[in-house]
Amino acid sequence: MKPIRMIIVAGARPNFMKIKPLMKRIEESNLRGDSRKPRVDVFLVHTGQHYDENMSDIFFRELGIRKPDDNLEVGSGSHALQTAKIMMGFESICEREKPDWVIVVGDVNSTMACTLVCAKLAVRVAHIEAGLRSFDRTMPEEINRVVTDQLADLLFTPSEDANRNLLREGQAPEKIKLVGNIMIDSLMDNLPQARLSDILSRLDVKPAEYIYVTLHRPANVDDRAQLAMTLGDLSRISRRLPIVFPVHPRTRKMVAEFGIRYDADSRIHLTEPLGYHASLCLAEKARVVLTDSGGLQEETTFFRTPCLTLRPNTERPVTVTIGSNRLTTPAKLLEDLDHALEGPERTGQIPPLWDGQAASRILDDLIAASTP
Ligand code: UD1
Image (cartoon, rainbow, N blue to C red; front, side):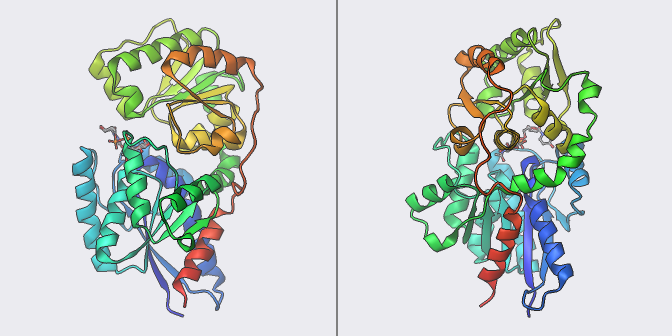
């Protein structure tokens, strides 16, 4: 049987935990050597959208992802510049490697740029985490989601709402496969190491006695008044419970640019961006998580840790309807945090198919779509 040639693309921090489970299942399937299943040859591309040790390399090490076969090293830049650089580099790779499938994940610029290249070259693309919609086109990720799903040939969705969105947009039902949440595959695989993390003792905080905060969305950190107000509220709430706040490079840059000073009396532990295991450990053991990250909304739902999302909308509605997530606004932040701190320590349920088996279902579907 002819092997399937597959390019797997990753570019930014939230992509790495979404590619590893599929790579692992492919390796296992190749090793088993089942004569009824084709071998899958993977060419791994890192676009270099994220490049710092603590935004990229640490995730490769902790997740055990092998060295990429090619790194486009596009780095930071405006959306157009970054997208264009990825497209130019990725086009050459596709022409040289002639893949049967390109696999893209999530909603970052790398996801959309590589999909666009494939559409023009008539290379088949599968999108993992398809169909999520915030219905807010001021978010760059929403544009990436809509364009990627319009052009992809196979749409792997994490939850029913995503299927409904895609059908409403006129996608053919046979292209849509509800496979569950691949991030949860990584989470479950890495839970033993995460639970061994010494991050709590390093930061001198105790389980259920701290708030874990991450903020990096342009809407929250690129506006001076909003960022200063949020940091002021965090100072206030930290008098009640200490806060652990790893600062994303975008947030760090904006705090410096705006000349905002942190309140020296507050109990906020500011750290560099953390690795995967430390972050999972903090999310599981926090009393409350406050975030604007998509990934943390899902991880807290799995852990049933109360989560407040500082955004007017979410593309992951099951984290609110089934899971432990609630949306909040800058105006309601203090009130909602107070409320969450008075509520139960565990809340919500784990959505269907967030069971650690998404990558197996994806591989089965990819093989079925590749064999006559
Ligand atoms: C990107 C993704 C976003 C994702 C986030 C996770 C897009 C449009 N956005 O946003 O969906 O939630 O990653 O982190 O794809 N920087 C560094 N080191 C790095 C990478 C970036 O210092 O390794 C700095 C750059 O100077 C840049 C800033 O961080 O100015 C923001 O990086 P950028 O890649 O533009 O967007 P993110 O905010 O990280």
